[in-house]
Image (cartoon, rainbow, N blue to C red; front, side, top):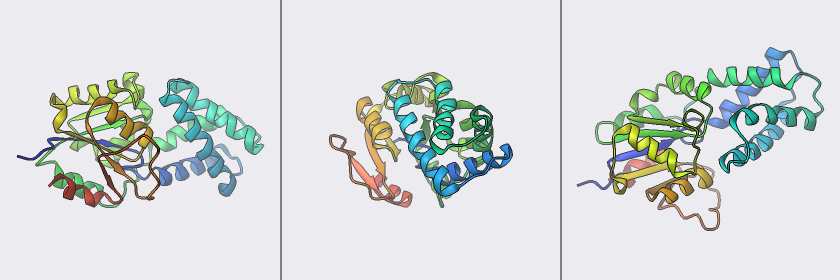
Length: 229
Protein backbone atom coordinates (compact mmCIF):
# COMPACT_ATOMS: atom_id res chain seq x y z
CA UNK A 1 0.00 0.00 0.00
CA UNK A 2 1.40 3.40 -0.97
CA UNK A 3 1.78 5.91 1.85
CA UNK A 4 0.40 8.96 0.04
CA UNK A 5 -2.97 9.24 -1.64
CA UNK A 6 -3.43 13.01 -1.93
CA UNK A 7 -0.74 15.36 -3.28
CA UNK A 8 -1.29 19.02 -2.48
CA UNK A 9 0.68 21.40 -4.71
CA UNK A 10 1.51 25.06 -4.35
CA UNK A 11 1.22 26.94 -7.65
CA UNK A 12 3.57 29.93 -7.98
CA UNK A 13 7.19 28.97 -7.59
CA UNK A 14 6.33 25.27 -7.62
CA UNK A 15 4.32 24.48 -10.74
CA UNK A 16 4.47 27.96 -12.29
CA UNK A 17 7.62 29.97 -12.98
CA UNK A 18 6.65 33.05 -11.01
CA UNK A 19 9.88 34.95 -11.66
CA UNK A 20 9.17 34.81 -15.40
CA UNK A 21 5.50 35.61 -14.81
CA UNK A 22 6.31 38.62 -12.65
CA UNK A 23 8.92 39.98 -15.05
CA UNK A 24 6.67 39.74 -18.11
CA UNK A 25 3.59 41.16 -16.37
CA UNK A 26 5.40 44.16 -14.90
CA UNK A 27 6.97 45.12 -18.22
CA UNK A 28 3.62 44.71 -19.95
CA UNK A 29 1.83 46.90 -17.41
CA UNK A 30 4.33 49.74 -17.84
CA UNK A 31 4.12 49.38 -21.62
CA UNK A 32 0.32 49.62 -21.58
CA UNK A 33 0.47 52.65 -19.27
CA UNK A 34 2.98 54.37 -21.58
CA UNK A 35 5.55 54.73 -18.83
CA UNK A 36 9.31 54.25 -19.21
CA UNK A 37 10.45 50.98 -17.71
CA UNK A 38 13.97 50.28 -16.46
CA UNK A 39 13.89 46.54 -15.83
CA UNK A 40 17.21 46.43 -13.97
CA UNK A 41 15.91 48.88 -11.36
CA UNK A 42 12.14 48.41 -11.32
CA UNK A 43 11.98 44.62 -11.35
CA UNK A 44 14.39 44.14 -8.46
CA UNK A 45 12.68 46.82 -6.39
CA UNK A 46 9.21 45.48 -7.17
CA UNK A 47 10.31 41.99 -6.21
CA UNK A 48 11.63 43.27 -2.87
CA UNK A 49 8.47 45.25 -2.12
CA UNK A 50 6.11 42.53 -3.30
CA UNK A 51 7.83 39.87 -1.18
CA UNK A 52 7.52 42.16 1.82
CA UNK A 53 3.83 42.76 1.13
CA UNK A 54 3.05 39.06 0.71
CA UNK A 55 4.79 38.19 3.98
CA UNK A 56 2.64 40.82 5.69
CA UNK A 57 -0.44 39.38 3.98
CA UNK A 58 0.42 35.83 5.12
CA UNK A 59 0.72 37.13 8.68
CA UNK A 60 -2.62 38.94 8.46
CA UNK A 61 -1.03 42.39 8.49
CA UNK A 62 -2.71 43.68 5.33
CA UNK A 63 -5.73 42.74 3.23
CA UNK A 64 -5.70 41.61 -0.40
CA UNK A 65 -7.05 44.97 -1.70
CA UNK A 66 -4.33 46.80 0.26
CA UNK A 67 -1.67 44.50 -1.18
CA UNK A 68 -2.86 45.08 -4.76
CA UNK A 69 -2.30 48.84 -4.61
CA UNK A 70 0.21 49.55 -1.85
CA UNK A 71 3.03 47.66 -3.57
CA UNK A 72 2.76 49.95 -6.62
CA UNK A 73 2.53 53.10 -4.56
CA UNK A 74 5.72 52.03 -2.79
CA UNK A 75 7.38 51.14 -6.11
CA UNK A 76 6.57 54.50 -7.68
CA UNK A 77 7.84 56.34 -4.62
CA UNK A 78 11.01 54.26 -4.35
CA UNK A 79 11.92 54.55 -8.03
CA UNK A 80 10.73 58.15 -8.53
CA UNK A 81 8.19 57.14 -11.17
CA UNK A 82 5.77 59.84 -12.30
CA UNK A 83 2.38 58.32 -13.05
CA UNK A 84 -0.72 56.72 -11.62
CA UNK A 85 0.14 53.66 -9.47
CA UNK A 86 -3.51 52.60 -9.33
CA UNK A 87 -3.68 52.46 -13.14
CA UNK A 88 -0.50 50.38 -13.36
CA UNK A 89 -1.68 48.11 -10.53
CA UNK A 90 -4.80 47.29 -12.51
CA UNK A 91 -2.87 46.71 -15.73
CA UNK A 92 -0.42 44.50 -13.87
CA UNK A 93 -3.20 42.25 -12.57
CA UNK A 94 -4.71 42.04 -16.05
CA UNK A 95 -1.34 41.06 -17.50
CA UNK A 96 -0.69 38.62 -14.67
CA UNK A 97 -3.99 36.89 -15.36
CA UNK A 98 -2.88 36.27 -18.94
CA UNK A 99 0.50 34.76 -18.03
CA UNK A 100 0.68 31.03 -17.41
CA UNK A 101 4.35 30.09 -17.60
CA UNK A 102 4.80 26.61 -16.15
CA UNK A 103 8.12 25.02 -15.30
CA UNK A 104 9.23 22.45 -17.91
CA UNK A 105 7.68 19.04 -17.45
CA UNK A 106 4.84 20.09 -15.14
CA UNK A 107 1.93 18.86 -17.27
CA UNK A 108 3.57 15.49 -18.09
CA UNK A 109 4.27 15.07 -14.37
CA UNK A 110 0.65 15.77 -13.43
CA UNK A 111 -0.49 13.44 -16.22
CA UNK A 112 1.73 10.71 -14.76
CA UNK A 113 0.56 11.26 -11.18
CA UNK A 114 -3.18 11.68 -11.71
CA UNK A 115 -4.02 8.00 -12.31
CA UNK A 116 -2.38 6.99 -9.03
CA UNK A 117 -3.00 9.96 -6.72
CA UNK A 118 -5.64 12.52 -5.96
CA UNK A 119 -4.20 15.98 -6.73
CA UNK A 120 -5.02 19.34 -5.18
CA UNK A 121 -3.73 22.89 -5.22
CA UNK A 122 -3.38 25.67 -2.65
CA UNK A 123 -2.27 29.19 -3.49
CA UNK A 124 -2.05 32.52 -1.72
CA UNK A 125 -2.88 34.30 -4.95
CA UNK A 126 -5.62 36.74 -5.89
CA UNK A 127 -8.81 35.05 -7.06
CA UNK A 128 -9.38 36.98 -10.30
CA UNK A 129 -5.82 36.25 -11.35
CA UNK A 130 -5.29 32.67 -10.22
CA UNK A 131 -8.47 31.14 -11.62
CA UNK A 132 -7.60 32.50 -15.06
CA UNK A 133 -3.95 31.39 -14.86
CA UNK A 134 -4.88 27.90 -13.71
CA UNK A 135 -7.26 27.57 -16.66
CA UNK A 136 -4.76 28.94 -19.17
CA UNK A 137 -2.00 26.66 -17.89
CA UNK A 138 -4.23 23.60 -18.01
CA UNK A 139 -3.35 22.61 -14.45
CA UNK A 140 -6.87 23.08 -13.11
CA UNK A 141 -8.21 20.02 -14.92
CA UNK A 142 -5.91 17.77 -12.89
CA UNK A 143 -7.04 19.05 -9.50
CA UNK A 144 -9.69 17.49 -7.28
CA UNK A 145 -9.58 20.46 -4.93
CA UNK A 146 -8.40 24.05 -5.37
CA UNK A 147 -8.03 26.53 -2.52
CA UNK A 148 -7.25 30.17 -3.35
CA UNK A 149 -6.63 32.37 -0.33
CA UNK A 150 -8.35 35.46 -1.71
CA UNK A 151 -11.39 33.37 -2.61
CA UNK A 152 -11.91 31.76 0.80
CA UNK A 153 -10.45 34.45 3.06
CA UNK A 154 -7.76 32.21 4.55
CA UNK A 155 -4.12 32.15 3.54
CA UNK A 156 -1.15 29.87 4.10
CA UNK A 157 0.30 29.06 6.60
CA UNK A 158 -3.11 28.98 8.36
CA UNK A 159 -4.45 25.47 8.69
CA UNK A 160 -7.85 26.55 7.37
CA UNK A 161 -6.72 26.68 3.76
CA UNK A 162 -5.43 23.13 3.98
CA UNK A 163 -8.67 21.98 5.59
CA UNK A 164 -10.60 23.65 2.77
CA UNK A 165 -8.51 21.93 0.08
CA UNK A 166 -9.05 18.51 1.64
CA UNK A 167 -12.77 19.17 2.01
CA UNK A 168 -13.03 20.22 -1.64
CA UNK A 169 -11.31 16.99 -2.68
CA UNK A 170 -13.40 14.85 -0.36
CA UNK A 171 -10.29 13.58 1.42
CA UNK A 172 -10.26 13.07 5.18
CA UNK A 173 -7.11 11.10 6.07
CA UNK A 174 -4.33 13.61 6.76
CA UNK A 175 -1.77 10.83 7.19
CA UNK A 176 -1.93 10.15 3.43
CA UNK A 177 -1.43 13.78 2.34
CA UNK A 178 1.82 15.33 1.11
CA UNK A 179 2.15 19.06 0.41
CA UNK A 180 4.72 20.18 -2.16
CA UNK A 181 5.80 23.82 -2.23
CA UNK A 182 8.70 26.22 -2.60
CA UNK A 183 7.97 28.49 0.38
CA UNK A 184 9.22 27.42 3.78
CA UNK A 185 7.15 30.07 5.55
CA UNK A 186 3.81 29.32 3.89
CA UNK A 187 3.82 25.86 2.26
CA UNK A 188 6.10 23.94 4.59
CA UNK A 189 5.22 25.73 7.82
CA UNK A 190 1.57 25.54 6.88
CA UNK A 191 1.81 21.81 6.25
CA UNK A 192 3.57 21.32 9.58
CA UNK A 193 0.90 23.40 11.33
CA UNK A 194 -1.79 21.22 9.75
CA UNK A 195 -0.02 17.99 10.67
CA UNK A 196 0.75 16.65 7.19
CA UNK A 197 3.98 15.57 5.54
CA UNK A 198 5.89 18.21 3.58
CA UNK A 199 8.15 18.32 0.54
CA UNK A 200 10.21 21.45 -0.05
CA UNK A 201 10.80 22.27 -3.73
CA UNK A 202 14.13 24.08 -3.59
CA UNK A 203 15.59 24.51 -7.09
CA UNK A 204 17.80 27.38 -5.92
CA UNK A 205 19.30 25.19 -3.18
CA UNK A 206 18.57 27.80 -0.53
CA UNK A 207 19.53 27.24 3.08
CA UNK A 208 16.64 26.09 5.24
CA UNK A 209 15.22 28.52 7.77
CA UNK A 210 15.84 27.78 11.42
CA UNK A 211 13.02 25.84 13.00
CA UNK A 212 11.31 24.81 9.74
CA UNK A 213 12.22 21.24 8.82
CA UNK A 214 10.54 19.70 5.75
CA UNK A 215 10.24 15.93 5.62
CA UNK A 216 11.61 15.85 2.07
CA UNK A 217 13.55 18.24 -0.14
CA UNK A 218 13.83 18.17 -3.93
CA UNK A 219 15.56 20.46 -6.41
CA UNK A 220 13.67 19.20 -9.48
CA UNK A 221 10.01 18.26 -9.81
CA UNK A 222 10.92 15.04 -11.60
CA UNK A 223 12.41 13.86 -8.29
CA UNK A 224 8.94 13.71 -6.75
CA UNK A 225 7.90 10.28 -8.12
CA UNK A 226 10.98 8.77 -6.49
CA UNK A 227 9.83 10.01 -3.09
CA UNK A 228 6.31 8.74 -3.65
CA UNK A 229 7.46 5.27 -4.68
